[in-house]
Structures are given as C-alpha cells and as structure tokens.
Amino acid sequence: MEQVYQGEDQKKYHFLFMLSAKQAVFKKENGQDSMILNNIDEKLLFMTARPGRTRAFMSANKFLTNWQANNTIYLEHQPRIALIDSDMNVTSGGIAEAQEITLKNPSLNEKNNWEFDVVLPSQSSLSDIHHNITLMIDWPASMPCVPTIKIQLPSLINDFGIRK
Picture 1: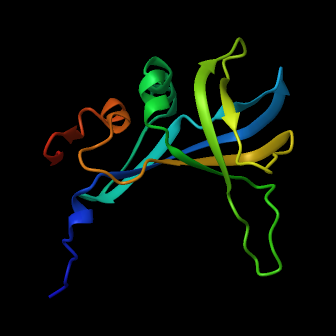
Picture 2: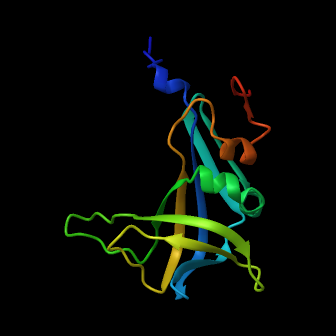
C-alpha cells in the first residue's frame, strides 16, 4: 500500500498559475519599469498538489481582470512570480534560471494588451523584448487560503478545503 504524507503542511493551500504570452516588452518611463504582455494565451493553467490535487485551465483574461478589480488585495498578498522565456541564457550545465519579478497594478491598455508595473530584484535588469514567455505565479502555501486564490477560484475553494 502506498504511503501518503499527511503532515500539517499538506493542509495549506498552494496554487501555481501559469500565464503564457507570445511576447513581453519591458520599458522604463519616469523611473518606473513596466511590462506589456502581447498575444496572451487565453488558457491559463493552474494546479495544486495540496490540500488536494487539481489541474485545470481558466480564462487568462478573467484571471487578469480579477487581479485588476481587486488590486489592493493583490498588493497586500503579492504573489511570487518567475519569468521564463525562449530567449533565456543557458549555463554550460544546460540550466537556465528563471528571472524573479514582482508585478503590480495590471491594466488593459489601448491596444488591448495587459500592462503591469514591474519591480526587479536589486542589481537585476531585463532586456526590452522577451519571446514565448511564461509567468509562473504562486503565493506561499498558507492556511487559511490567501484571499487572492479565493478571488480567482471561488467555486473551487471553501473555508474547509478544496471542493470536489
């Protein structure tokens, strides 16, 4: 019989959202870094291994619209975000390290592309254009579930666990 670990950390909510786009353009205006996502894949993959296993797609525009409408909550509960793309440099060992970024204040611009304020770790920089990008978006595992997850997945999350 398979042994399944049932420790306290397995009761914590931990979701990972993967948002993809054909292109991300980074720019700096008036001292503020920003990122524009062009040609977002409409399907956003999300998954969790705890407190139950769930893998599904949701609308990327719904995810971003929810974020925009609840921006204050997202500022209070900022996700961890890693940027990966097809332009990443690979080490001699064949490893490419994702770039850690912080995204804030999403808005839909006049060209119908999503734009964010970006904060980079100190001493970091990003080139102007990145191709075939994926943003790996997650929040530290917690119990109870962070409000941002409840905003995104209200039909899936209740106060006692993941709904079946």
